[in-house]
Length: 222
Image 1 (tube, rainbow, N blue to C red):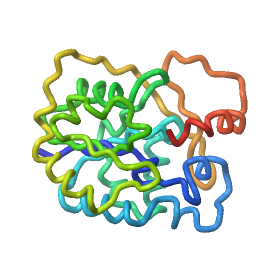
Image 2 (tube, rainbow, N blue to C red):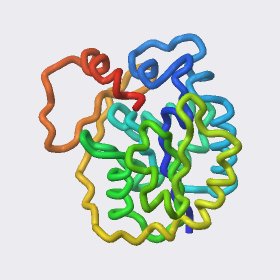
Image 3 (spheres, rainbow, N blue to C red):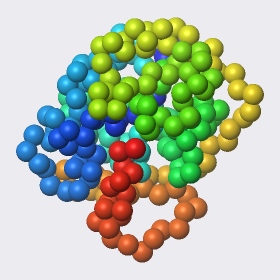
Image 4 (cartoon, helix red, strand yellow):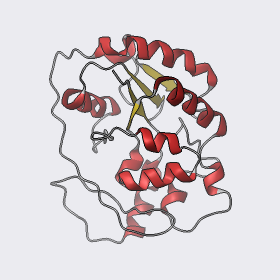
């Protein structure tokens, strides 16, 4: 079966040095944005994983609050990750983390709804990967946590290889987690098509996109 790769962006691919997610969303294109947004060694390692295992990619990043699938595909195409754009899961490409929930809970919800026994690996970081360390996924070897400011490296490849051979052992769940419904929308614009995404049932605040971006700047890269 085609394995599943849960992929975070901040401190896995994007080290926020010199640019981060806020620079993508704020409008305008700073010099070198697309060439330096993602850390080159991390990109190289991720592409090696894609080539070796042909996984279906499920995004777990907080950037899901601002970009829909088309926006991510454009982002990956512009940053040398066309293979990742093509590898996005055909029907369940996102595992959004609602406010007040951990990354672990977001992935558990996806697993409950979509997992069919495929081997899987979770690429996240020690800061935003809340709940993943020492979880049942971690205990079976399916979690690969990157260091903040370092990101994904060649040293992680062996852990990914082991996870994709053992990840399906973590599919059994003692409790069934029901995922919350969610929706994402986009507003065509440059450099990418985006606008803040809202979950169904949340009240839409009467505020400008600029104000929302500024308010979320502190949490965007978590």
